[in-house]
Amino acid sequence: MPTQPTKTGSKDLEKVRLLKDENIKKLFGISQSCLYNWRKKKKIPYIKVGGINYYLEDVILKMLYLRGGRLPKDFDDEV
Image 1 (cartoon, rainbow, N blue to C red):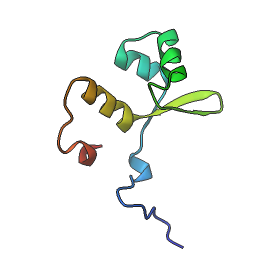
Image 2: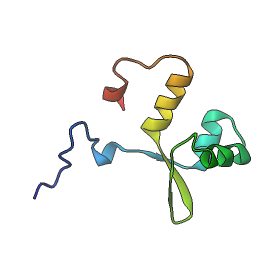
Image 3: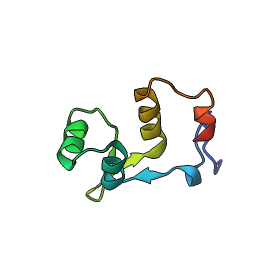
Image 4: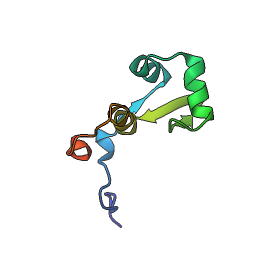
């Protein structure tokens, strides 16, 4: 049985970074209630573990780039 993920394009788990609510609020400049509404309306993907919300950094960065109107060509290679 392989020890590494076999899915094409899968990320190395050591490189995956998780952000918490505080990081997201600071990054977007929003309040806790705004972040709550984003989660409720499914505008931002997250996972809840042990009562703490986590966000994948590469997904959030992609959201920021797209909001700015462009995504670098090598974005998936960088993250």
